Length: 278
Ligand code: AMP
Image (cartoon, rainbow, N blue to C red; front, side):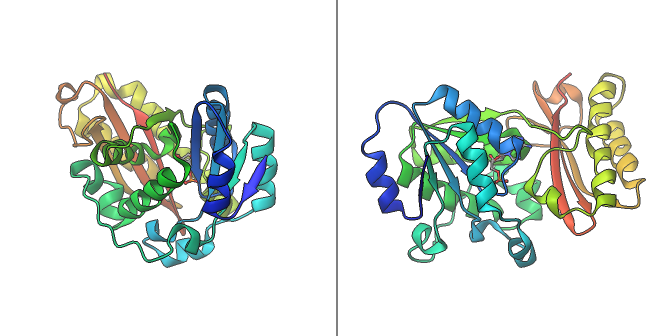
């Protein structure tokens, strides 16, 4: 496994590789969720490239950026173990030699949910992902379903920009109590961490009850259950058409349905989602 801090060194090393090239973009503080993406990439590609970059342009909250967990040594151990070939850990100047002023428009999929609650977030995601795609010139890129809307935005971006890159979506990896793994879980107090298991519990129950309740009824049940814990506060719970991310009002409105949620657990914001197709 080789580690690079500049795009030039990485590009030179990649020039000597053959076969299918896969990319796993991350922001570090890696866990088993990230590892599952790298493992899948290892299985499907000849060359596995992983980037670790806490991208400032996708943070709408400066405190979130400042407090974002970082542990490069542990990350490198995990990546070595998962079979990565190249790890790219750039400084901000290497990704953005000049400020990136590009403005993307992903329509509906970029405007709702995270797009509405984190202004500029997906624009920043698109800025960094296009930069990484241009540097790495990958054939496939691996993303987690944990960030369900992000995958939709990236698929849209790939279509808009004409990238010939296959987007591979990987399932959500969870803690034993059901909480979706996230680097931000490290920042939860033990009390908030324990409370946060209620998020997936409520989503799972919703998936079980969807046939018996209206969309609005199921929505309110999930929100009330989570808000019933004083340590948690639902920011949004949206039951959407999984393709367009438009909210549905009846189960027959969409063939595939997803329930997407954002919850505040103290100072930390958590997201999760579940399939709700009937
Ligand atoms: P991040 O480092 O949070 O930007 O995440 C890098 C990639 O890992 C993204 O594609 C995420 O969707 C994915 N990821 C994060 N957490 C999980 C998880 N619990 N299960 C599966 N994939 C995940």
